[in-house]
Image 1 (tube, rainbow, N blue to C red):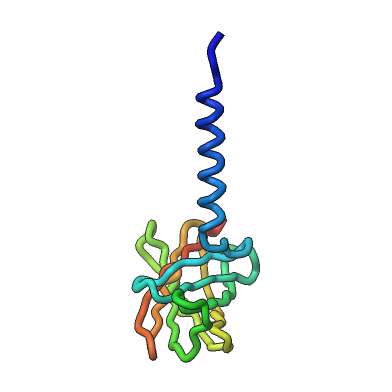
Image 2 (tube, rainbow, N blue to C red; image 1 turned 180 degrees about the vertical axis):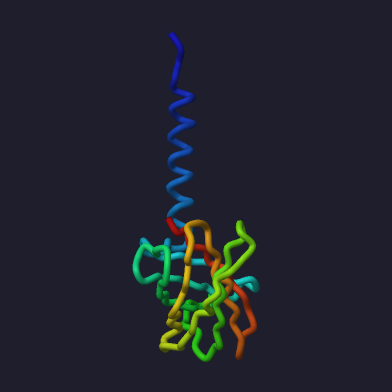
Length: 140
């Protein structure tokens, strides 16, 4: 008969290590929210689409932009969003409009994701901060 005690101790140690790692990681975004860090690492960008989940066709979205260092909302930015489908090497013919809503929120209208697949929202931030982020959405 084989002694399984070393294997059981190893498994227990792995479970404990993974549990501790999960406790120290940043909070996951709520379900239905895509979150990325900007190219510079200074901004956190969360995307919530409307409808949720996003659909083929025209969607709306809300970008919430915060400072990574302290979590404070980042207002006063000019935001440009270009939907891009890398697999097809094209974007959308409609350029979304972005309106500041305060509290680090930016409303995106006319987000045309006209075909199924993996879309990247190429978001450029200018004003007091120059940065770029690329949250992604999958359209069924």
